[in-house]
Amino acid sequence: MPIKAVLFDFDGTLTYPGLIGFKSIRQALNCPESHGILEHINSISCQIEKNRAIQTLDCFEKDAALNSIPNNDAETTIGELMKKGILLGIFSRNSLESIIISMEQFHDVAISDFKVVISRDYDINPKPSPDGICMAAKIMKISKSEMIYVGDFLFDIEAGHSAGVKTLYLTNGNEVPDFNIRPDHVINRLSELTNYL
Ligand SMILES: [Mg+2]
Image (tube, rainbow, N blue to C red; front, side, top):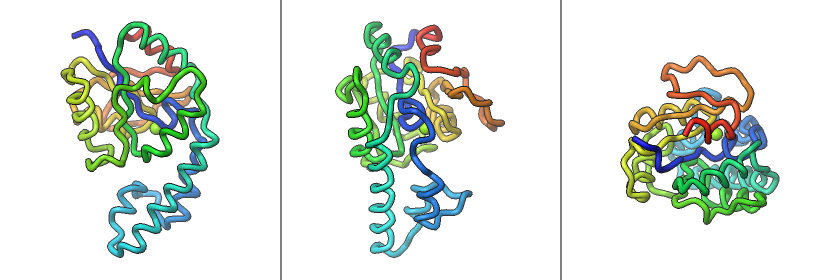
């Protein structure tokens, strides 16, 4: 089945990795290392406390977004995929606002180049749930076998696997962690994506 769409994770995949300080966010939210940040916020029972935690996260994300830069090869790869007529999408645990601000730091790529942007603003379960990937396929009107999901974290591989799409793990030059679920393919840089397709 030819690939008609590429869905991307955002932080560390389309943007240069390591610019958002997850450690500081966890500290500010008292979120243990073993918990996901969104899962931790969702588990807060007091609504006032929960709202405060959401505001704190939004604040950290917005700061990081203002300083974000495109990942290596991100803009040229997106350009090449567009030339090939491949549909593009984003599926992220970030807020839509932070994605919009981050994309403003790109030069040759705009958020309007993406047919679908699934952020946590959607009323769906975040990754590692496959919901966002299934929703993206629906919006793009393509079957999941015609789509791949590219990401740099375990949740991306888990979400893609559960959704039944092929997953590409982006190492950004680091070693591949010992995942329980193996990605279908490993790339070190985004530019390897065009060869893969
Ligand atoms: Mg990521």
